[in-house]
Image (cartoon, rainbow, N blue to C red):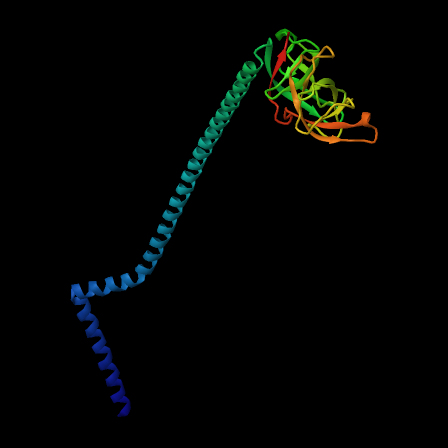
Length: 270
């Protein structure tokens, strides 16, 4: 009897479930909603993942587009920077040319009594034993050996060799250079020679025993010796060295021309 009762309960339960299913499917809207909800719950995670992936890909495309744009912009900036640097160099060249022309003008005004040819230094050999310069004018410009070369502040040296378009100048600070000079105060004749240990000083020798040479005295060419005209400024006395023998005393003369900064020169042709 118990077994029959159990079977009856199971049958009732199955019947109830069947009735519920029939009700759900017989109601179109409710069934549709149920299916839609089930489909939505299944599809939405997949759709969200695909949407996320699409957005990431779109973002990467934008990133690479930005990179290409930045590269192009960088190249344009490099080009503009190169053009600005070129303009700056041109302005510097113009400035240098103007300064050189100004030096030429000052030189021609200062040494107006001489017939001169302007030039500028294109090379320097300022070592311990040789102190020469190369200028950009030569025989075709009227330059010849032994012609005097001057700068804005005073004597530079004389021409020792020429080509068609250049000339080599032995400066007064060269150790082989020897200049007949005179002192501005006493007008006594002395000789100035280049030194090994200094590229801006000369050694004044053969000072007369009765000459009163003083520090700060101006030294200029005496006109003797056949190379340098008289009266061209050389430098000033900066130190006097006395010896036991008065005939051996000497002085150091600081040159008026700064050979490290020498650029424009004049060659005296007369």
